[in-house]
Image 1 (cartoon, rainbow, N blue to C red):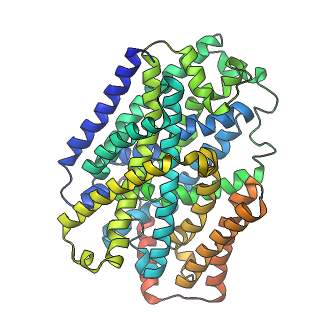
Image 2: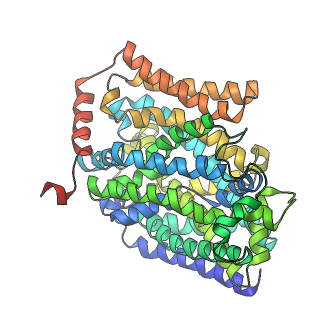
Length: 497
């Protein structure tokens, strides 16, 4: 790292903190803090949705898969998300928005108390919040590995520096700070990605490297599927990501809720879907090319860092590193805000009677305290990430497998086709998915495909099956789902005129 690189990183961190403090003035109530008061433009919501969906894990764990197995990681890691979010633009985005507009919901789990009951809401809240602690911790660990690879900064200090900066702006500005920093981070990331792909193409002989490189890669690197990442794994990942990125990962539901209308929420979702299909190819092209530049690398997860350190001039390394920070800080800030909303509006009133009578300012203060506490806890857990199986194990095995059972009652509970499935189906499907994962991962040493696929398939079967054979349909739920369904069919203003 040259002095120019450090200057670039410092300026980036300063910009993020500045945006956070500027956003602080826009936050007057807890709804401003959690869902931007429902005033976020569709394009900002779409970019924020996209930026909040992946982190520095892309440049560590996924870069390692790209180095060893090639383009398969794009198909199951990102194309699956683009397809899933595109589906969700029509199924879920408008419903999330109408939950805010028609029912006053400001937390992703708030409607579960009405759709099912309090025990169901609390079960999903506690399990989801606990899982997110480890998910976010893996992101801190991934970005600290990058900082260590580039500049020799110890893992602990990397976690402390990136975590503290995120903690400051996220606690101060809430969702407005998250979205505005996401926009700034998207610009930084775009510049860094373009610089990196330009340098790689220059070393491959020019623009022709875009199509001539593939024949030089190791055998199997141009196949969308491999013996480890099979067709079944890819299809299951599309299902998992459809649920996860349309609200199962609570922070992304907030982007839909923050949009001013159902139409705006759908446009934001379609923008995010398009970005997921296109932009990861730009970011990952250097990763696919890495075996040509640094063959026989001992630790594949350092491939992107090693290659960029070798190819980039002074100043540009700092820009690329800032681009990597942008992913992690965007996702973590987004997760922290969502977890804070769930704790403040859904969990705290159940645990503490006094919290039920909180006014707007008291809920806002509680939201900031829980945001601070959540980020601090994830930083502590991040110091133990290696002992938990490493970044890829946490992100792929833990999160992908466990997010399904948590998402099934939450997302399918919004759709009118599953109105017969009530609290019993929700709790049993959630518990069944978690038990399935525990048996496969800890008891049977099952394959990656089985570990990821089985929990969500078991949850889906139980949720739908129990609704079919033991209906819990009620008039109140029918009315709620019918109103959401009508709103989901809202057309654009240009069409209705």
